[in-house]
Length: 340
Image 1 (cartoon, one colour):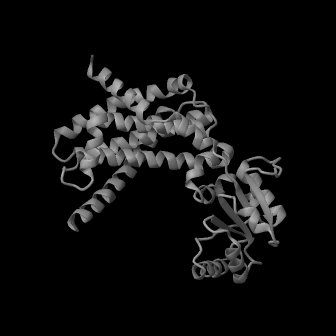
Image 2 (tube, helix red, strand yellow):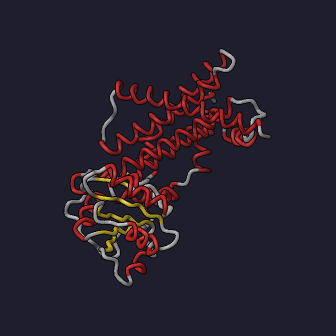
Image 3 (tube, helix red, strand yellow):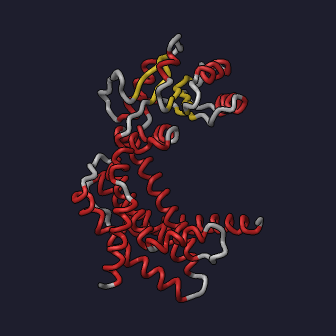
């Protein structure tokens, strides 16, 4: 059996033992409810942007539900079983007492995003921001007109309200997919960077021993590539693809198989010059994972492949981002080690 065959077998065993297809499917199928609070015509316009459906109609028990202003008795009970609330308010008509009242109305343990609509005025925006600081509320969002905004404009403010539901939100609301896909890709790329960086650091750095314990069972390459496989499955799921074994693995395995080569190159390069591996391995781990995610995202969204020039551009941009992350992470590890 060749080294590549042995590594492939190790990877496959790792995927079977650690990666739950059913868990990923359950995450995209999870039920949720987002409450939109505002004037009737405005929240209806916002709902169309979030869903990407110009024919959107409110559905009793649906994933989007409205509460119209002014708030009425009993409206709070309607919101207590929701996972997130979005306030859409008029920038020029709202007052501090209105915001305070809305805050008091807000059910506990439910995150809210505050969006203000109205022609931008620096002074007015600063006044509203001052109210939010006094009331210890999160940074408000300012837009000029809901109808003129693209759905993806609102994605960061909705997805961040309930990160555990981001995949379910993305599957159900196409305008949110780009944001969620970007978050999944960056998170997995950073995880792989940290794993590769840890394996290149001296053994006396804190937490390294734990990570080496993982490597001894699975092998570094198996962990990194399994993370890529998981990322591709997550992206397939949010774009509405069923996680059937043969269909998805036929798409993903070529990506995973290609990972063996660049990681081997990284190890060889890193072994040539003392200290080089500290930068090379994690840079490639991040960049290749990021590129893999982008390729998968493009394929599941467009049904097409990225060109060679597009791949190179994405990879080069990821390399620059990786080097910044490496500097930040190693600096934090050094500071933590010095305080021990």
